[in-house]
Each structure stands twice: as C-alpha cells, then as structure tokens.
Amino acid sequence: MSGAELAALLERRGFDFAAGVPCSLIEDLIAALERDPRGRYVAAPREDAAVGLAGGAWLAGRRPAVLMQNSGLGTSLNALASFSLMYGLPALLVVTWRGFQGKDAPEHILTGQITPSLLELLGIPHRVLARDSIAADLDWARREMDTLMQPVALVIPPGVLETGHGSAAGGGGPGETRGSGLRGIPGHRMLERGVGSVVEPGPPPPAADPTPRPAAADEQHARQTPQSLRPVISRREAIAEAVKQLGDEPLIHANGYICRESFSVADRPQNFYMIGSMGLASAIGLGVALARPARRAVVFDGDGNLLMNLGVVGTVGALAPKNFVHLVFDNEVYGSTGNQASPSRAVRLDRIARAAGYRTAAAVTAPDEVGAALRAALATDGPHFVLVKVTTGEADVPRIPHTPHAIRDRFRAAVQAP
Image (cartoon, rainbow, N blue to C red; front, side, top):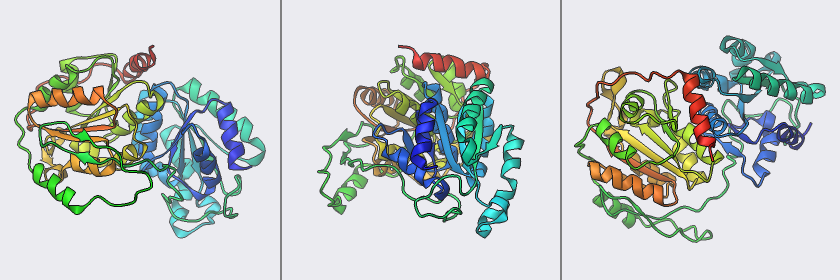
C-alpha cells in the first residue's frame, strides 16, 4: 500500500490532524500528509511534543494521529503515561517497528525486541499492521480509542508500506528526519523599544531576499535589552495581572505552582491545568491553536518547563500561528523541587523565541508591563512571546481539586463552545 492510500483511509475514518517525527518506514505516508494543502500534519521536534500537540488538537475537537518510530515510545513515555492516559485523551499512535525480528542496524535491535512490551506496560491496546488487514485494523483502532478514551497503537513492520527509496528496512537511526514538513514561512524583522514594552513587529522581508540581517542590528538589540532583568513581583502577582486581561481564551498551564497559583486567582472552565508531563504545555497550546485558528490560545509556561521541550519554540516560529500567545513566568529556579537553579538565569528565553521566528517577543518585570504586554498580544496577530521575570517566592496555595477527567471535559466543552 502506498502512503497516499493510507492517508486517504485515515481521512475517511475522520482523522483530521497528525503530528509526528519521521521514520523511513512511513516516509511515503508523511510525504502524502505534507502535500495536503490544508496543513493537517505538524512535524514535531520530539515524539513527546507530538503527543502534546495531538492532545491539544483532540481537546479542541480534532481526531488526531501521532506518527513515530518505535524508538519514540521511549521519548514519549512520560507524555503518554501522565498526559494522554491520565487525562483520557484518544489518539491513534502509528508506530514503526524498527528492529523487527532482530533484522536491522544495531541501534534498533533492543528497541525492536521490547516494542510490544512497552505498549503492554502502558496499557495501550495495539495491533501489528498487515497489508491485507489495514482497513479493518484502522476501524478497530478508531472504535477502541473512542470507547476507551485513550491512545491506541498500530505497529507497522517493514514492508507493509511503500517507501520512497524502495527499501523495506528503511534507513537512518532513531529520530531520523527525512524532511521537516514545515513549509517556508517568511521570517519577521523584530524591533524592540526596550525592556518593559511589547516588541513592535517590523514588515516581513521579501520572500525572495535571502540577505541576512546585518550584525549591527543584533548589536543594537543587545544594547537595548540587558542580559539581566531584575524581578520585582512574585509569579502569583504576575499571573493575577495577566488573568485580568483574559476573556474566554483557552488557557493552558504548565505543571507545578503555575497551575496552583492561577487556580487560586481565578478558576475558569477555559483553564487546562497540567498535573504532570512537565514540558508539554507549549505543545498542547500549539495543538489547540492549530485546531481552533479563530480563537486565541494562551499558554502560561515556566522557564524549566519550556527548557525541557525547547524544540517547540522552533515549531511555533516555523508555523507562525497568528492566534498563539506564549507567556513564560521565569523565576530562574525549579521551584517545586527545592529551588535548584534553572539555565534561564544565564539564557534569555525571549531572545530564543525572537530568533526562532515569533512575530513579537517582549521582556517585562512590572505589573503594569505584564498587563500591557498581554493586551497587545491578544489584540494583534502573533505568535507572541512574553517573558515575565518574577521572584522565587511561592504563594501558599492548595493543589488543584479537579480530577484529570473533569479538567479535560470542562475545558473541551469550553474550547468547542460557539
């Protein structure tokens, strides 16, 4: 079967969103998905990010599939266990079986041996795809994921799908990237008025002009934005200022005290609280934004959370969703585990976002600056990034009392409401 034929079968069964990391065993399928002008496939930087993207898309009303090599099961183990399975988020996992029957490059052999056991340990129902049963297996997978409200896997051994280079075994190692699938999106020239103010977008350069920005512009930006920002408010105070600017926007929270402090400020049906799965908030928020382009999607992130899955910043920059707003409350420590130092005390996360292609990037420290930055981001096309430097103080607030299923159900209903 060709990849185009499998893509058509997936669409006929209602799968309208896909995210993944490429493998040569399904390169023909990915190529077919990339050719879809509706842009329903997202090339994720890691498999756990793909799981987050799919979860966000399902919460926003899509039926998602996640494409990965079996090596990616290890990468996505925590995301599957403490996000997809804990909240009960249906998704079809299309998992290639490298190392099948011990016939592959050395790096695939052990993973090939334990692939079925990994799925069994996770409690994820699965079938091994065969050429004569693909349609029936897809029907089974759809019924199971909808009935059980959880991921279901179809494992693809070599030879089931056609490959572009004609090799049943495929080539490359774990996480191979045979084309990103992120089509050319023009960059944006960034002009910053200085710390404490929202960055004004400049006009995009002509698409055909490959001239890099002069070094002098970067030097001027560096002079205007000092490396060190002095926080003057706590994270809870900053969250309170940000929440004042919100209407009915979906709001995805990073796990830890960001959730708990936001809950203490204002609990909303539009709030998705991450209880586990550190590092996934930005991927989930991006999935929501892509699935619901008419609504702003806001992410309350933390420095440690963002650094754990920093590749998503590049995905946001490449896709450039106009409705994506990303706030990072940066206290330069891992607060929930004893205030160990975060790399963000030496790395400016707003500059990373700016270089990655966010339309605007701002750095703020004062309460009025937090509100002004978010108001501006909600009023204009993004993607926008706001770095909020805060103190290490933590409010004495309770844990989130809602169950994962309750968080899921009320958030999904709020996101899909007219």
